[in-house]
Image (cartoon, rainbow, N blue to C red; front, top):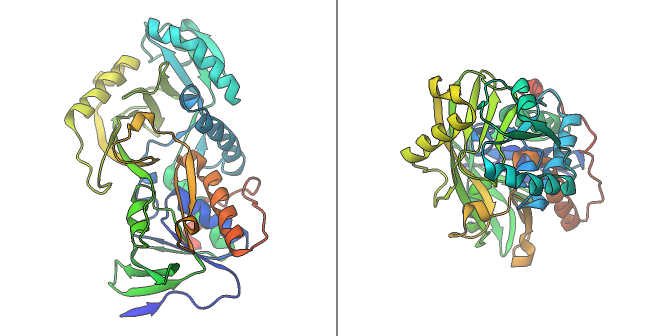
Length: 394
């Protein structure tokens, strides 16, 4: 049986597919611009990529040398999130630590690149670094301080959605899209199955936003489209004990196992990188796990004595084609208006990071408004988010 998912509305309507950080932020932005918004998510909120990342609030320093566009996006959005969502963030700072001569050699390029991207940096001696973080490898040579931080991924999504709900947005978890509603070459909504009851429902909308991350190509194919998203997996390991209070990075180009960051009473070591065909089926290679432990110990020796709390993996939605090298793909984002491919009423947003979700939503909402002739400006840069606790009462 198929039922109607939403009554007709005098306002423009949008169906957002995906309730990770990008979908939640897009629902928030579109609702503020006057749209009647419905969000559908096949699982629980943030149950996909967002809920399984390590929770790094990027300063952009990690990408400053090889991916300056992504670096500039990250520092801008880090500062905005610090203003609109302080409840969710831990602005504890980060250190890029040199353990060998290669790190020393990389330092000047790293510093210059950060300054060019507008990322504040401060050089530290070995003794200054160890005074800040005594658990670090005592043989380190120097460090660079940057404004990294950490956040709770679920709470960030809930805050976006709670704020969207204030403007009338509806959120439907455990609702999976089974087919798009097509009238010729135009998308007018989706047929969605309630995974709790089995009921099929029609959600009609003026525009459908594909915010499904590494699953974006799967949804796009329902409209006969192809989007260049390469699911790229990474392994992370959590161990007991908050051995550091800051985000610790190796002072070197991004590589496997080069970051350790605190999350509550644990630290998380990450991450590896390889392309996968199906983001729902990620086999965790044991050698990747071993590499995370080994590299983590090199930064923080006491990790060798810490109890393992969990091993997990997630697929990042990087912009690129199958076969492209994961470390070489940009961490920036792209919004696709599929009118350019001959399909109206369908927009895909992918790439990026949770740190840049608000900017991704702004770009997507600009595209949607232009498509529908809606004259409404973005307000998400200044408006404080509701508490994530409000979501339960929305």
